[in-house]
Image (cartoon, rainbow, N blue to C red):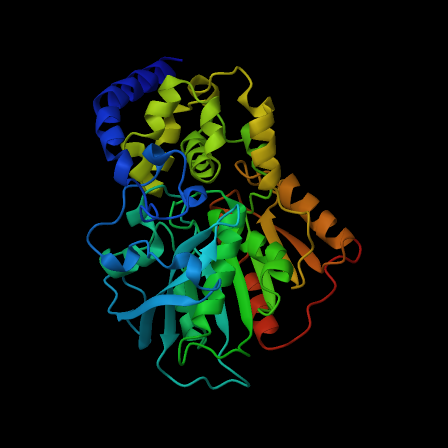
Length: 428
């Protein structure tokens, strides 16, 4: 209790010092559309949006984003990465901005990085593409992978486990999409799925990255699995011309409603609160649930933090209820609607799917992301005709990202090689 009181006091002091500054920034906050954009494309809550990137015009919101088709490249460039992508395998790194759609179908720009080995592809057919969705789990615009690849020196808190080098060594093109979108809408699944599919559309337009017939696999863990699962679910309806050879998602938060029992008020509360703020950027009606402290905190410098500081806030074990104007914000119609809109399972993927997760029958299992989520998702997708394998592995959420790697890499290789996926739904 003393720790909680201390954290709340520090939070109040932070808010009292920073909220006025944050509100001054509201007029220019967070990857906002140009002033002449259509009114329904402008977020209602500018004060909680991330502060825009100011030192790299590549990330500026273009005026013509609604005038081009989803997946169309708006701008592109070749860069020399400052982040260590791979120092052994010669490669070309290009960045693209494409038009995509947010959670409500509004036109938004999405950036992505395309990394291609310089050596010719020696396998059969066209060079495969792996859409690798990093666990961004951040709120600040400068935390997005493409910005960090161009300006930072490391990706050790997002390239988890470190897969870029492994995929490059296999000769694959690696697509890293900034799947939280321009508003850094952490946990907004539909935004993420749209972003990845439009990133794939854009990557196939780049010479040498992979032509239209390149097989594509999609993978990601934890926060990256949100984007991965939604990519699989939305592809048949949103991008039917972009077939996926296979999808592998691990530690998947399939249902945000389950996390209230495992992350809210616990050591994972920092990321849980960040995810709520990320959802509020796509669904600003959620601000109606916040009390003055909650609103002030959302518009403070918290809105520009990356994953490590946000995760560290979990030491305070802060429950979302102290930031809400209701004793049960989860039970409100607004919260139920947002959670429902971001719950996987309503539509079946066309691509075969591998879901892997920390096994609760071995050691502790995944204490943050309940195993019941992906197990239920497998049942729902299989019932709708999809081919979904569920693979439990030893380890909690962090170790559970590493123990399944041999199976995951082999499964992706087989799908990209054109081998049919075994029936994952048999005997479920």
